[in-house]
Length: 88
Image (cartoon, rainbow, N blue to C red):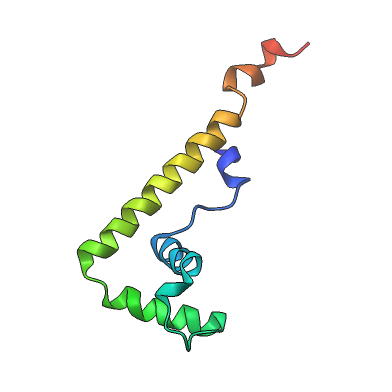
């Protein structure tokens, strides 16, 4: 759908995971101060997560994508409004 292409993509599982860490800085070791170091640390944590924990983040990413797509498509005019017979 064109409406979906006109909006930013939904965040993937890792981006949601990293965002969680950014929103909860107490989860980071105190020596982690710079974004580059945050990214490296969170990537290391992500790689060390058990698969079932990673799957929870993949499920959150799917839910976020579905929520965004529903919201975007809900804002788009129905196809019937674009039909030639409706144009004056």
